[in-house]
Image (cartoon, rainbow, N blue to C red; front, side):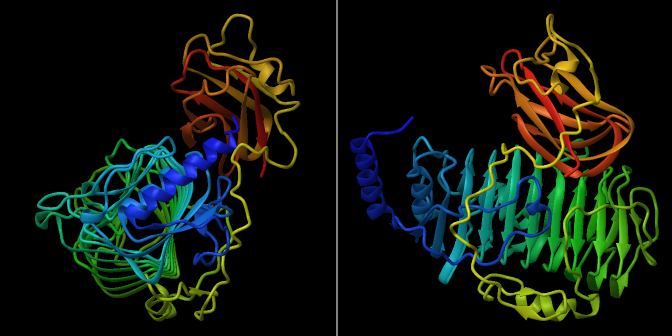
Length: 511
């Protein structure tokens, strides 16, 4: 619904007044900000990650100002680029209220929002003892910032002790050229530097430094939290860390061109069914840099081109199953995006020259040569994940079945190309499948709800019905992407809903 000119003017004046008191410089221009380059890795999938591209650019010098910028938008999805300069701490970070935000004091809270970029500018942005918390949000970019000494115990505390933490239905986050650091381990009050849990997917961490911590980071909070994945780690430096570089519980990860130095207990810990592609990394002066550790639930890896320089390996026993001393692949992992590998021999040099905040956001060109990327085009609008995919809808002419159906509905209604007919489960949950007589490659599906029932679908899973593997999970209808899979039957399972969900079309595409 459009707001009147008076209402818009009132909102603008209110935002300006709040800005004056909080350290927010408001600009109505969408001129180029300091963001450079474009998302890489898995953050390019599922519709891509563009952050606040195309939105207003503002400058913030306090945490309260960051929250004010979020709360001053027209809606929780209005694109915005927040340039941050100076030190953000507990003393200047308070809760700000508004219909387009859900903030809290003592943490940078990115909750229930989308289309946001936070980028350090000028003399730099330092989040001191203050974490960044991303929850129930999507399309977020964080670039060129330092986050240090975030504690979960002692004083002051923030974000459960995580420098950057993501949880609860998070999608498409690109964290680039950051420095994440602590001053000890759990006994000193610190937790992880980069944590993802509770259905966090399509994330890339690139050109960053993680150091001086007991825990580098994790994917999955427990052995049963396997709803996370599709995470890329590349051109990062892990230094002076005890373990979790990262810890993987379920899901797929791509780990390439990282430099690991002084890992004291363990490194890449693939467990609970996780699958990691580990390419052209350089490990130095470290212990047990790859394997399954501290659990009986195995994980898997595909390795190539890595260099192990003065790496020691423990004997395999019980819950500790290191991959070395001669790591070999025990799975294969398909990567759906393009990327250029630097030779592992040059990784220490190229990562030392490019990774971390305030390094000029330089990147590698795949030939071990740092270069400065061009500025991100601020006029490019964020991709709408509800836009239909291009190509042929493979569901037309296919078959359909499911687990239950309400009276008067049919499984076949989801593959007939008619938005006026629909399938509905007999209760609030159920599944419907599209099937073919021979193996078919699928990488995207589009779930289109019947008119008048939009928003009925809450949580869901997409399954490879041939193997039972979970291809994707999340909430809400729309376009769902996953690595291209050859299968005879793909299932959309609704695990929770508002009222009676109605699926008008279950479209499938090869991508």
